[in-house]
Length: 112
Length: 126
Image (tube, rainbow over all chains, first blue to last red; front, side, top):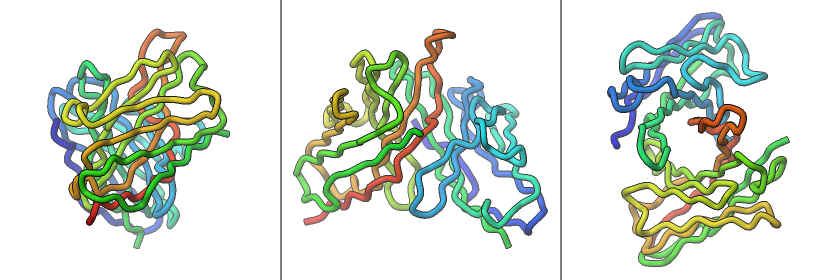
């Protein structure tokens, strides 16, 4: 199972909006509504930001939103804040018998 | 409050067996629906799911690594242990444990990890 494709880096200024894409195939992203997004600050545990394409866990800011079109999922962060600077990873169910998932390579978000 | 923490050797030699322990709190693996997975990330590469153990002791492994992996749990200690045999420099990575669930109410698995540990870096080198 190949990794999902994410841009290596994105950047934006405070207050702006950015979108991170996550491209897979019809066997993963395109085939199921089971895309999740994680935020990881250096040295910290990854944090679940979006699950099942569009859902936010309790406590996650509504500045974070998810969507999907075809084989590409997206994470949009609006009203960028300095604390949003982190690495972001997408993940998708693969439909395998082991119920496992495949991840993206990660995107480094820089808040200018 | 749910927390997970990975522990194990920072350095192992090629051909050795790696043993990692995930110690968690805030939930029990004897509770129906609870699952713990191991995930790793080699430097500069994508995260990779390795293995999962469920509350009922069902175990699942990455197809590509299943011959080298063993996952087990000690419910009384709130620990999950992963062993990986025949370590190679390409296994150098940060290893994470993370919680996922089977939704008992709906009867469906969830395909996301709601809590993660901070990870532990394992370097394979002679």
